[in-house]
Length: 376
Image (spheres, rainbow, N blue to C red):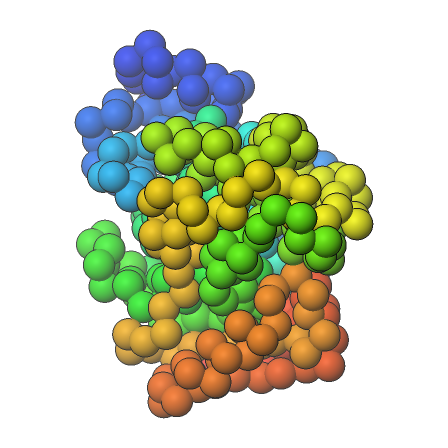
């Protein structure tokens, strides 16, 4: 199969510094003034980052626009399946995983697919290419974490860039997301027409473990609250607050935090999911704040924008899976959300007895049939 490599072009010094952190070797092209979806650099993945069923894989950086319309570098990985591409190219699974941290080292394109490898391998062995886009700025030094709308835009720009790296990709794609990745997937399902330029052919969405209304969890944290949440939920809350604090210093989030809260947010900027979850197990949320987070001017509005999950606007099929013993999402919020969206004729909701991490596997048979159908 054919792979393109981009020419090397000197860009602005600051841009090259960022790219050097993101991709220490490989080829680079494009300046910050180029359009979204343009490849900046790419390099072949080392063998330890490969997954079963992939004939080749590349990590690449590309230009996208964030919520304030500024250009920024994001990163991703493209995995190509074995064999020759069919007529029209390999149909694409666009994968967005649960957020695993905001430090560069937590980007899946750097750390590898790890626990997601069996799922991605399944799609490769079924004849699909997989394009996995990192969260906006994670891996390139300017994280947006779960700004769902920005992340969905980044997915589209990452897909466009992937086609420049591998012309054997089809324009047809299905968005698949788990956890915070489900937030991204549902945003793309509702807003894909906003970024339709580039000839992409969106066919539908598969989402599992949707963390609906996660902002309400944070805004109900008050001083002295003795509640210790499941470690996955606490870690995600810290990642979100740390990203907001770093990206919006004007909100003065620190003014509502205790010294312990500030230290935990600092920790969330350097550690990835599994490690942080081990550290926060049993941590009472009330120890993090000296004032309710709801009193921080501008924070409630920003949080609702960051984690908003659309409940309408779906014009292509959407398949959602949810575990009924999930302790990473706020289950009553998520079930309420699912009751709303299942009224849309494009949406199918499947529930399972299991928890958060088991749901993608529980849905896999139905998801495979769904993807095969919408890709026809």
